Length: 114
Length: 113
Image (cartoon, rainbow over all chains, first blue to last red):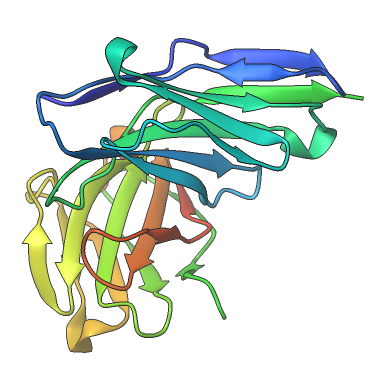
């Protein structure tokens, strides 16, 4: 069975702090995809990144970076120099190869205070 | 490019009443999904359509939930009769095809009293 665990329910930081959101996944499949989505107060899920299981290179996009480690089944997300606009709920999700079903974690609510 | 549209944004009903939600996917997107997101949880897939055919409805409570996608474009999700535990946000998503990125709408927040 597949599962995604986001142990951090809520994180509060002050603007300009760095923050890391943890994601641990479980699957027996060797081919899979991992995702991060952002859900601002408006409600819609905004796609941030997709990684496939064969690509363990870390990725950086502006203030965002992702650390994928198969050895620990983790796909952590770091925001550098956080801003108030980063306040949202962030979801990690898993999809196994040849299916479309996204399996989401329970989300981490990030609050960035000025 | 217009995103996924959903209506209504909010709905309050009493238990045992019926309710319907509407979704208009991104133009040209063949695959449409309905998710249920209960407060404090991640979204859970209810049903997936490929054009107007159902691909996966294994987690749809078929005794009270139904969905259709006539003509392979817009879709409606219906609950009849509603229960208290159906209170959730119902998200619609679409994608160009299977196994590619899904784009989500703003959701419909349902409260069942």
